[in-house]
Image (cartoon, rainbow, N blue to C red; front, top):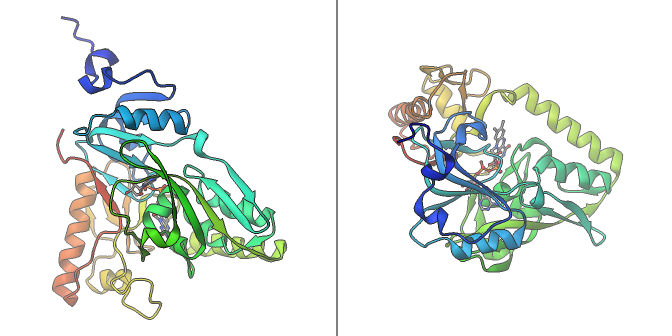
Amino acid sequence: MNAEATPMNIMPDWLNALPPLRGKLMPDFVMGDICWFRVGGPADVVFMPADIDDLSAFLAALPEDVPLSVLGAGSNVLVRDGGIRGAVIRLGAAFGQVTQSGDDEMTAGAAALDVRVARAAADAALSGLSFYRGIPGSIGGAVAMNAGAYGGETGDVLVNVEWLDRKGEKHVSAVDELNLSYRHNGQQDFALYTSARFKAVRGDKAKIIAEMEEISDKREDSQPVKSRTGGSTFKNPDGADPEGLKAWKLIDAAGCRGLRVGDAQVSEQHCNFLINHGVATAQDLETLGETVRQRVLDHSGVTLHWEIKRMGEAHA
Ligand SMILES: Cc1cc2nc3c(=O)[nH]c(=O)nc-3n(C[C@H](O)[C@H](O)[C@H](O)COP(=O)(O)OP(=O)(O)OC[C@H]3O[C@@H](n4cnc5c(N)ncnc54)[C@H](O)[C@@H]3O)c2cc1C
């Protein structure tokens, strides 16, 4: 037997039974290569569809018992070292358009980065979307997480979303149907967001650009934005309430600032961020996060909940 595995002989059986697809099917794809933390084992298959019809055909043909996950820009996930069983969908350039729609609305594909939406709105002298300047994810991830910053969040500016269900059927939902709350999307069943429409208000272009620059400067000062991180690890216990309990304060008070497990560390700069200094494993990062949760519980009696989405298996 040939000792060198070819892509064909590591393909799961269900993959060979799919109809012809125009997008890229990538078996045994190492998730750490596309996630901010730079950790995570291989997914059985990552599919990058050529367009929405290709995606729909893939979903329609995918057997119901094959696990299915979605990845955006990978800025809020911790993929475990054993990787992800089944299929992972990652939207690429075909879902990256950002356009002005009507006088005061923007429409963005789910793969468009938040920052592009903020910039395009500024170029069109539309205000209200500047908060996206500081969030490094994609629009799909923003809808899935109700991402927000500096007093604005996705639910405040979203009009509606287009999405596909597990069988590849297309739907449109108004923002109210998503039951968005602080860093949470309450849509019950599997939904793969493909595009979103946002409302904005006419504004002064120079002022909007200045506001975005201020947001960018503030983040550089307060967050390890150039590190291998996943953003805020835990939700603030009182949600978006500006006067409420802050996860970082509880972590600091419990003595966890700078705490390390292997090459994983609680950021010295912003202690609700975990950092991979280079060779941390997903297990190091998860163990560190769980240690922080336990210490905060012991110290203040508050249970922190993960904001970062943990995906996949600990072992292959
Ligand atoms: C340095 C840094 C700073 C950050 N600052 C902020 C901040 O200020 N505010 C904030 O809210 N977040 C922040 N984050 C977290 C993160 O950027 C947001 O949660 C972002 O919205 C995640 O988008 P993503 O595309 O990276 O999603 P991913 O991390 O890839 O995925 C996150 C979740 O969204 C789901 N998802 C992604 N795309 C789709 C889709 N098309 N359809 C259905 N589900 C999908 C995934 O399945 C997963 O459950 C920060 C992260 C970093 C690294």
